[in-house]
Length: 263
Image (tube, rainbow, N blue to C red):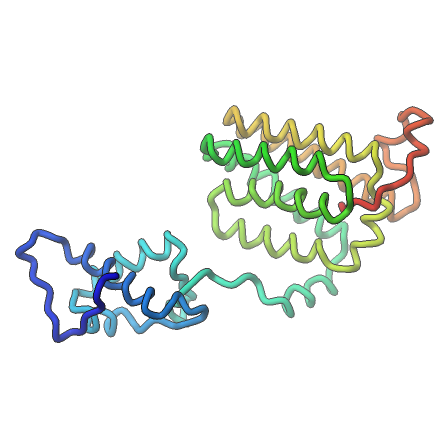
């Protein structure tokens, strides 16, 4: 582990090592010494520069690297903190859930997730596509409500992560947490059945295929079709009516019991 030095230990530049590299090494050592303690607030850039014996510009550059690595996060007007940025506070989620409705949540998803799918298609690496395929298979293979909820949420979140936009990911997380509120449970039990699950599995496959071939427009359109199907089934469940995609189903399939798998 690198040694954390004070301002009394000046850095020699005769070795050819840049101040920014030295600053990064020493800031990592400082974080290691704190154990990446959650919510630990780092000193100001001025104080850090004096503490580790480098200029403020070098500290600023090193902090940018550490932020990109996920070891620190910043909040404007508050400062810089160690560890991962915490999610939206639970009390705020609960408040939002009380003031919205499932249809509003679907409206928000329709305005965010197709764009995330388009960005994911443009930025996806072979590794992220392989991970998305694994999650897709896990979702399709789920045989109980909890398993499907877990993997379906992971599928959509992996796309949001692959999109590589931190602000949109934060919005996605907020919506996803509202979606998991208890008020959704009764609707989830009535809005899904085997016919619909098969359709969703096919739609997931279309989304993955578009992302894998880096087809932004195709991924956006596939995600929109998927969410519109979810929305139609949700509205049908709320009104006690069969969803449009069920009306032409075979009689034998239409009598299958709902599995209680989540929307």
